[in-house]
Length: 500
Ligand code: PEP
Ligand code: MN
Image 1: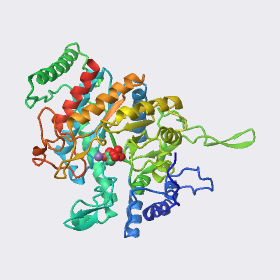
Image 2: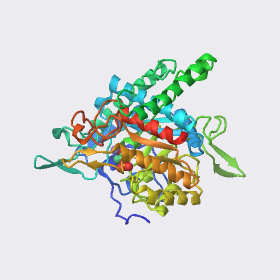
Image 3: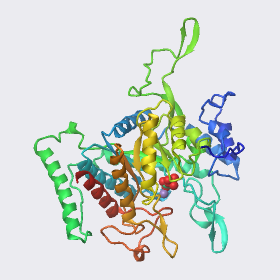
Image 4: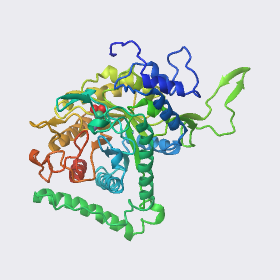
């Protein structure tokens, strides 16, 4: 059930993180007390070893002073929306780059991703006939877990690229640099600032015409099918305008778009974890005039002080498939957060382990607090998903079931280029939809690696990209992403499944 117990190994940078958190209550002997730094006493995977600990301390101290990037009000709003997803009343679309680079913090790249997510969400609303909750894998997706800490480069062993928050892709930049921690904050903040500004200025305003260019779809039958969907969406919007349902109070001018990333670099996450007042929409909200400690029957009884620990670096964070050990540092850190969180569920996850994890990160069984992001692979899903659904049902937890059809379907071409087949991606989503239906459950959403640009990283789809085309515009620094046409096509096909 559990990983073999490794002797607790304090990560060096974790120790620095623990030391600088002077304001945090010291851990009592009880190992169950959570603090933002209690993870530092647990064994950690994907550890980072910095040469200059003084520089790490300085960076973390700076991060601790900087203001939240997102707020409890927004986080709790998302948590409420995810509750709706868990109950089958909404659908969750999450997508963005595998590894977001600091260089992607730029007008066109951000804008094209927002537009793509919006278009996909319209198609999914049309298909599933439910509101769509949108979470971008953006404004902070800078840390990457790696299967090996090193790689070969021109006959020499060099450290692997682990994301811009840690080291650089250029061979000469592979040493972890603590200054990148602060830079990650600034790039997240600048990206989210532009997202917020664009939304407030009408990028998602449904009164403006959308570009649904479908010329690349060569197959007449498929093009006719997609055109029908676009016509139906356009017609619905026209109808709403005609009957005046698009008045300024209708919400057609903008949408909510939340941010997310893998919570991998715990030093960074800890520094942005703040004890903040619950907003009134939080179930444990306490009006300000109730004192935090009350004399009840002569005993000092502690009541909630109306505050909780919020990770203010993103609305939603997830634990990766490589760092989800029950007794490890990442699970320890995540269990204390108010944010809705995700857990990647790969083929090696056993049902008892899954339930034990849910009990640790969500002991009160809050509906929709946890999103299980399943990523088995197109051939493995049939033998694994049903068992997991059954186990979760039996445990009394109500989760969001999200399908990540990307990470179980990565292949290398004979020349060693990482790619994914569009048909494999679609096949895993289709299987997820079918298996959930058979189990009396439902698929709550999808988790995709995509970009708004015309990259050639995944093969297949209506454009007919082949392995020979991969060299044309292969720009990912980690996993291959769906390009804008493939991503939209996937949305059409998923929507079609609901309408069939
Ligand atoms: C990812 O989402 O980019 C990732 C590394 O996924 P996983 O943890 O599922 O392998
Ligand atoms: Mn990835």
